[in-house]
View 1: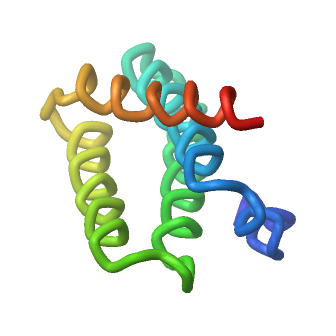
View 2: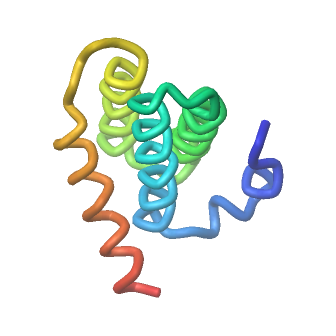
Length: 105
């Protein structure tokens, strides 16, 4: 686990927008390094999944939101590990959460 301090409870104190903004940063990093065939891709991809899993397993998350996050995981994994390209949609998805997190902090 790369984010032990976050898994220890700090992550749950962040708003959903802040969590998804951070997840989006790891997604963008993984996407960029995959395109560049950079060996750091795997670490960024693992961090992306770890943060997304921490969010989707939150106890106070509504079922519909959990389903959305699990679908997000499925689509992002397909994009980052296969030839599927939904990147414009996912980049936009994460960007809006990052903006919201900046406005609320």
